[in-house]
Every structure is written in C-alpha cells, then in structure tokens.
Length: 267
Image 1 (cartoon, rainbow, N blue to C red):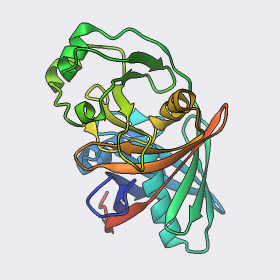
Image 2 (tube, helix red, strand yellow; image 1 turned 90 degrees about the vertical axis):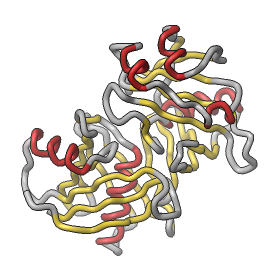
Image 3 (cartoon, rainbow, N blue to C red; image 1 turned 30 degrees about the vertical axis):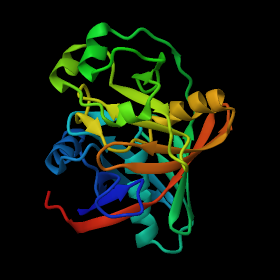
Image 4 (cartoon, one colour; image 1 turned 45 degrees about the vertical axis):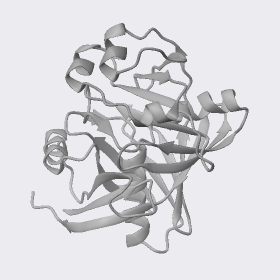
C-alpha cells in the first residue's frame, strides 16, 4: 500500500505536524488500520480510498483509537492526492460521521472547509490545572462534538513555556479527549495561539491541530470581532494556518504541507 509521511501546517520540512497517509486499494479492517497507525506512530494516520472522480472516503486513527475528524491528516491526504493528480483543483473527503469536507488547492496552499462548533461554560478540576502548571485561567469552556476542554490564559509566553506533568494530567480527568490551552498572540502576524494536550486519546501533545480550530475560530472571532484570523500553534515544532468564519456552521482552514517520505507498506 502506498504510504506517505507529510508535515502539515508548515512551509518547511520537519516542522508542523507529521501525519501518515495510506492510499488503500482494498477494504481494510478497522483493527488493521489501527495496527498500522500504531506502527507509524504519528498522532494521526489517514486512510484514503477512492469513491468516484474527485471524491474519497477518509478515516483517521491515532496510535490509540479512531478519531472522527482530523485537520492535519486531512491536509496531508489532500497534499498527496493533489501531488499525484495534478489535474485536480478540488477534492471531497467523506468522513465516517458523514461529513463532506470540501478541499481546494490555491497554488501551494490548500483550503479546507470544516464544520463550526460552539463551546459552553465548563469547570476545570484543580488537579488538571496543577498538572498543566497553571494557577489561574481567563476562561474554561467545552466543545461536545470533539469532547475537548478549552482553557484560555492571558500570556502566550506562558503558554509556550508550559511543561505539563502528563502522568498527572492523564489521571486528572476521565471523560475528555483532550485539553486545549489558548491565548491572545503577541506576534505581529498572528491573532491567537494554542497548544493541545491529549494523553487520553492520542500522544501527549499534538504539534499542530486543525480540528481544534472548529471551535477556536468562532471562540476568538467573537472575542476579537473578526471573521478572518491567523492561528499559530506554539508547540516545539510550530505550525500556522489562516482560519475564517464563513457562517454559523462552517469555517475554512488554509495552510501548506510538505511530503517528506514516500514508500510502500507491506501488509
């Protein structure tokens, strides 16, 4: 099976978020895809199969479990398909939950349409704050579609320097998929920054996360009174994307990706 490693949300190799992309030519059992994702070891691996014309089915797996929606693996898969099929300017990805993701190529950039999700007030356990190394926060909210807790803090430099105790973090909560920490950016070209920790369902930290922007975009659009913003994920690898609130139920995410490895996986 043709298999790739792609760095998403970056214009440089070995930055951004690496994802596996597998082009399936036969029906793969769920446990086989899970085993492959664990073997590749990236935060997510996308399995893509051709449906018709420019429509493809896509499924996402972390090393631990199937993920319903993943932004960086979608971008990685789109980069591979656009590179292999230079006549394509638009793709449609059909997810396991029935979402139809419209993907468009704009020179080196790739634009993806994603659903827009809201957040509700939430209470953060003291043990979780302690595990993150935080004593105060600006706000706590929750997104039910992704099952992710959002914490806003005041200082993006503090955000960049967070050094969580991941064992304590894992044991501080037992019902969420991850915790996203975000802050207003002090960088000239960015509006807000974030880091995403998910020891419950993936790796300790996701380097750059497209899926969290499904609720980060309306969250910061409301606070900043802007519909188009630049998002920066200040993990050690770093990554960027331009996000836009298109409607009450749709956002767009635009960024770049770099293919760093192409090979054949023996099943």
